[in-house]
Image (cartoon, rainbow, N blue to C red; front, side, top):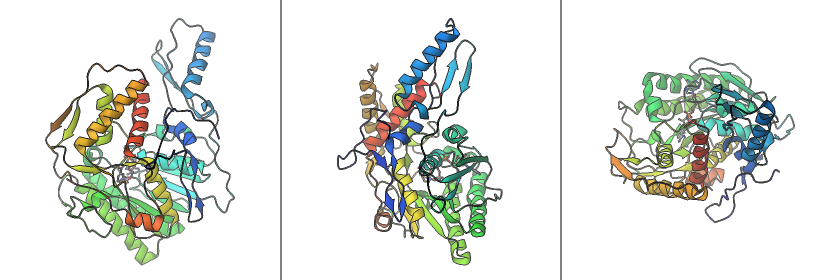
Length: 432
Ligand SMILES: NC(=O)c1ccc[n+]([C@@H]2O[C@H](COP(=O)([O-])OP(=O)(O)OC[C@H]3O[C@@H](n4cnc5c(N)ncnc54)[C@H](O)[C@@H]3O)[C@@H](O)[C@H]2O)c1
């Protein structure tokens, strides 16, 4: 394994260092070295400014030196985006060498379809499945996702990327389907409410039809939003929810509810092998910084030195799960025998006010470590609450613990630190 590249020491809740993600369970080994995974998202691109007066040879030397500095050790797995100020142009390269992927026997290698695989959750799942040696096909219409999240795999013999809208049928032979395609943040799913419902219903119908035809195992990424503004706290899977069917969030909440209904319809009627993950708030690198989700909002505001906005009085609570824990949970669920819905989330609860303070503290710590002097301390300001924003949300993860032996390992603090560094790198490259 390559040596560590990014100077972040990640400790779990018990103070043990985290060096790998994944596990061996249900006959499925999903362990991956954290450093290799990090090399794919933490600093995949950078801007290299070559002086206008530099000769060709000087420019190349500068490029090489800066590239080596930036990629520190895992250069072989880094793509480059190089900005040339003189011509106001940018040149992209793909990877010169792909990270090593496991060589699986044909009987162990799965043909996996990931819908929405160019999105935040999907791209992390794709990284894992690829490193584990599976054949991965991504279909995505790039509404909220971006090719850049998976471009580091383009050209790999185990990888295919297809622009396709799941509202239309799609034919492929596969063994497993992770059905993730659906915009997940309120501004995106409310942008075109009718399309969101179509994606949830028709997209799920099409993918279930495919699962039925190919006998593939089907996993849908449902959401804690199916519980609406819950009257039960924390929410176990057998709580039916408290959802406003006509409010602005209904296109998503009710869309996911009907998608679950459809999933169990195919299961009961046609024997489709199904898995339902009810995902609670998740955060991590590659989250769109401008989609209005609280974690990205806070970090970007604090990094820019702007005041941090809390909606409401800050007393509403949320729990936040780190992306690697979620991916562990999704892979465990897919490979388990559990056909009932399973909550995947972190039950450490914060008020939004407390959370804003934690983000501010971590941003200050990272800036200090990097020698950045802040002109002033950012303030936390309060604004009116949007309609139907749930007051409380916390998963009851007993089922995941019992049937998947899964529980979150990442503390919110550790995840936030990694994410702050990711956004800092994006700012340095000019994309935030
Ligand atoms: N991130 C979270 O906190 C969270 C919480 C609960 C549930 N989920 C679920 O997880 C899944 C992924 O969420 P995410 O956070 O990665 O969101 P995302 O918006 O980053 O990713 C969704 C992906 O689906 C694609 N997509 C949207 N509509 C499509 C269509 N009609 N056809 C093909 N592709 C389409 C988008 O382009 C994008 O790549 C979603 O189903 C979401 O409901 C996420």
